[in-house]
Length: 108
Ligand code: SF4
Ligand code: SF4
Image (cartoon, rainbow, N blue to C red; front, side, top):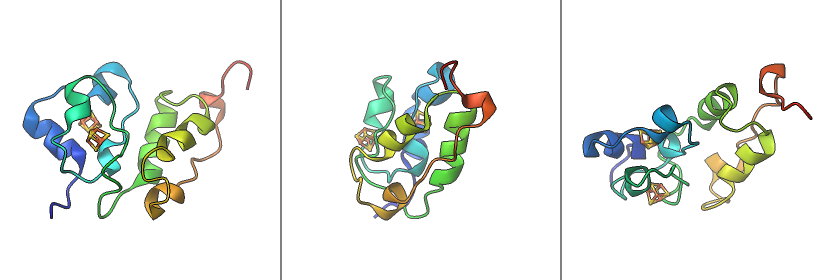
């Protein structure tokens, strides 16, 4: 069974990275390959339906998404990990860091 991430399939497929090109949150970097990266091919972020890859670095992805303003509220980021495979350890245990001043909304 493949142990790489959806990102590798995405690059092999030649799809544009929705995270970089459109600022769309994407769980591809921490998700198990196998689907052919179909969601990014249709301009959607990966929702992690294949579950976490073997050695996912969810904290690093969370920090990147928050710092880039792609998940302006930590709650949104938490929900991103709690859709498919919410019980998978790497997703269930991911607790996005508290919002920093840079990622606070005007109301926050
Ligand atoms: S779109 Fe998602 S899966 Fe594709 S390279 Fe970017 S982060 Fe990875
Ligand atoms: S949500 Fe599922 S089908 Fe879509 S890119 Fe991610 S792993 Fe593939």
